[in-house]
Image (tube, rainbow, N blue to C red; front, top):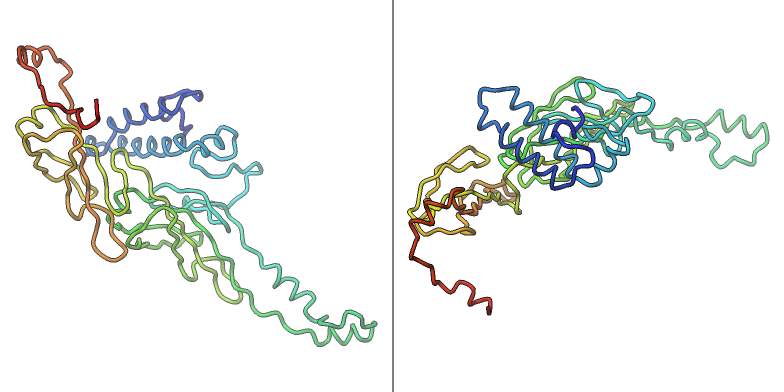
Length: 320
């Protein structure tokens, strides 16, 4: 990915507010729902979201500014090391992030020092005080080191928000060139770890495992609340006064929602079963909070309300 500041079009000294504002503007402009036949816009939308993901995280932004990680969140490699194959770089320990549907990390094997020392010095046993003859006998009868299992390899997998909610399988590539269709578990969340048996480094005692840590990407307008998905839905004054049927996005695709006449800002409507899959079965809901907005040009509205005032004692309950 290019420099995240350039991707969002903000200077390096930009404030958090500047970064958030730039992201919202670009996300609204490039969102796939508005650019269904424009693949370049979809790619740019993904780049913008990843750039915001990095710069909105204070720790990641500081590490990027210091040159400790690159624009994709991977550790900077001062000596150009690491193994890269098809966009996936496995390494032991915590690996860095990847683009949706891929893994990225850094190459390397976990070494079991105990097995190495066992193979070199296992025959000495308790005969450390023996002279040359005793030592010769010890080496002559040293026991064989057991076959060592291959090292585990860790990955960090970024999963799109909607895919995590609907448990959409993720096709991923491993360091050996193979691909796996990864089935996400119900109740998946940030930090969920999955184990792929025998998909780690090979060894004489069998291959190690692949350990996959899930990282759910942020969404431009959905947020998660437990098993529910929340959405702030803008509405017009006309929607609030007369009621309306409006199209609402969900993680499963858009649906039609009925807004009752007299609905005000803050009213929460519930779409059953449109949230995240639950560990015990079923799915959470989507909670839609209305945000009624006045028209930009208030002149005509003010004219129509001439001579009328709303005397409802809304603030009495506040004691003022």
